[in-house]
Image 1 (cartoon, rainbow, N blue to C red):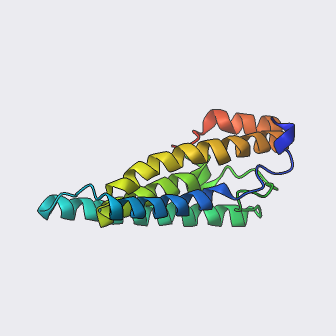
Image 2 (tube, rainbow, N blue to C red):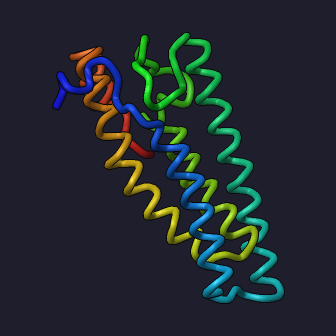
Length: 159
């Protein structure tokens, strides 16, 4: 698997496609089969928590993109990496943008009261793992070898 991904991890930018698809499916399902949502104070609390998670997701995304930009490597998930980024937010997660995507889906779901988006966050994370992360890891290992393997030992994939 390693040699197959040496040049680049994917030919399709799966993560943004999966994120948008998850949002569209979540909203479509909610329009067809609404699951209900707590009213009153509990609805307000979950909405506030959702807004908080959306802000955190945006902060994580911006931090990760800035770190990658500063390192002069691509943020596009279907392009080959020029440098291994291990600083900034990447000290805490090997995939902070994908963590942010999951938090964004959960946050939007809580903010607008759509339980389907919470389910889609789980499905999105699993699909991202299979279609992007595993291939990106093979790519990074092929490109950076022992340096990447050492980084993997220190920093978790998601959190």
